[in-house]
Image 1 (tube, rainbow, N blue to C red):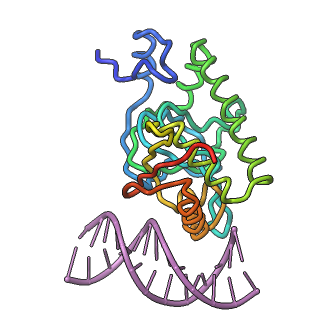
Image 2 (cartoon, chains in turn cyan, blue, yellow):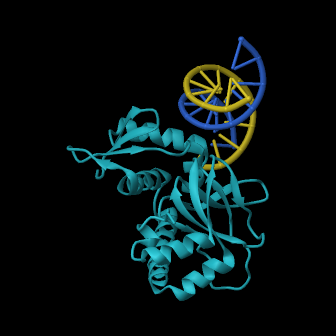
Image 3 (cartoon, rainbow, N blue to C red):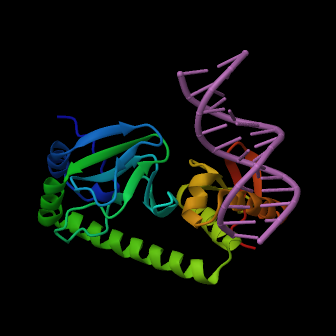
Length: 220
DNA sequence: GCATTAAGTGGCC
DNA sequence: GGCCACTTAATGC
């Protein structure tokens, strides 16, 4: 059969046979933007690998205010929190930010795969370490840095992950999300994002080169 | 073309 | 920096 699961990211070091096995355990699904994938504290039935697109995993308070715990793009896996507990409830809610293609693996099949395929275990360990580091950095940023700095840091990380370096050292990035999404991630009001953007523009740290397209300086 | 959603602004705290 | 009220721009049906 045709194996669609690419030999990259999580499946980079797997044989074609193993990839075929994993693929048979799950299913490819396409989502349009703003679809809810699961809700916090509901039974955990499936795990997701992002093949394409962007997913926001967030927590929400009773006022409806959101805090984005993490954004997941190509080659990411979620939910990664509480993987080894047997509570089997989703630790947060998730929705697609843009149109996305996800590979969906039922809980039991996913656990078996992580249990029996050493390469996946290694990937998981590295991934968890990365995410853990990321969360710690974000947390200290939220204490030590201004909203403006946090936003700039966010844009630069995005540039490193998805942007392209220009001859002049600046990066081009295409924002695959709304200002509101970014506000929820940074933890500020949407108006604040708008105002910070003006500061960054007048400080020539960022330049708009099209709709949702930015040029960004990687150092001050 | 009209309705809805997102983005941007100014004022007040 | 948040929140509110309001305007303007973009998008969807």
